[in-house]
Length: 298
Image 1 (spheres, rainbow, N blue to C red):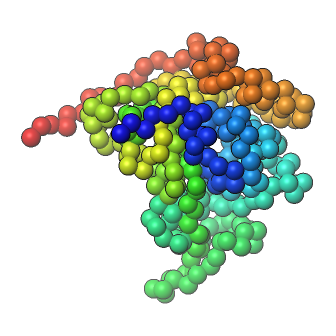
Image 2 (image 1 turned 45 degrees about the vertical axis):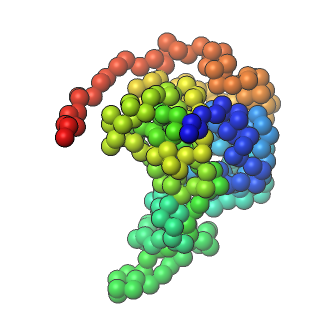
Image 3 (image 1 turned 90 degrees about the horizontal axis):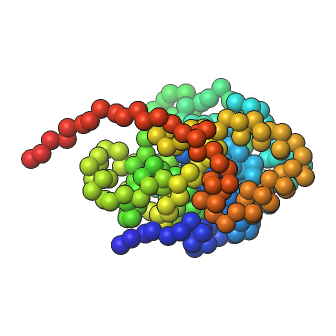
């Protein structure tokens, strides 16, 4: 059965006020289009979880969507602080939980495995234990040093962007792989956005690249250019100029409001956003094909 929906329909059906939402993707394939649609639909009281919040959560916090953030490392990558999230935390306007990168991935892995928690080795970030009561020390039952335990994370919704998917939700992604697989398997519902919708024969032609299987996907949305200003390897480049520009925009509440009014509320969907941006040539990437793989026949 086809799971194809518009992004607007998917957000309306599967993201509810008060949900825990995990927008996956590390460095690239960050689902900005879905974040903007959540803002447009006025979703509220969300718990926003992400290993690296990036600008998408700065914008969602600015729009009043969030009551809490769960994160590991928070910043405008390569530029500086996430000014809006940081200001909200310092003013006590946001609840928060902080983990190490591996702590966040371990939480998702526990959730994906159906376990209440998972242990991990102690990290150098012992201050996190004092700041976050959800991080516990437990004895190694086999006599080794104490371990750190973190609770399972089972988001209500995981949003994952991929390069291509079929209408059933089987999806290929490549390049830098973050926590997409763990987040998808841990979540109760999965919204998949894709650069391309392809025939299932394309997915079947390279089964080892099927990171997300359709059996766990709730909705598939065809959303080209969904991760700008981050990038989709093989489709368009990272917009470094935007990351630098956002640092200046986020200094001023008036400029943030102006940005949201023009680039989120002021466009109806991602296609209109991309056409308005006019960055097709600037962010264009040249093809660099991998070698063919012979899977053989029997």
